[in-house]
Image (cartoon, rainbow, N blue to C red; front, top):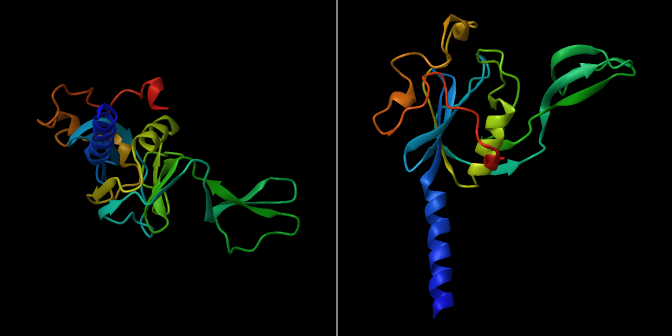
Length: 201
């Protein structure tokens, strides 16, 4: 009897934890939020899809997770000496003799729509990806360890037009900072939440 009760408690707790976690991605703010019970618990700056490769808006779910993922479509082309010839290359571009195409690393990949997902990557301060949502590695690790297949992901907002939008001040514009949201009991700093603690990794 006691084992059955403990087992049912564990199953309910696991189900409730899955149901409580969700992700919101605001393209206008260039920010991703990890929510628990509808309340933001972690925020990360992002670099979403640039014009011509915009990140799709809508309601999605995490389809799969892969810790060491590499793009099958994008990367760079290097010559025989290893020097970069094309930094932003497509896999079908011609490669110089002796050179090769090197797929782009997309570690801590969390696919949520087609070939798009959240992953660790370079943030230049503006939307620059081919549709994925790049995050600093420490935040990508925290999100990766918190979500599972089926976790809801909502993408909304308009991609900023200005290439240098983020250089004008805070990465999260005033007045729209989710951490000023009344659903949050104790707001974090106005810029973004502090780096995740070691136990998120």
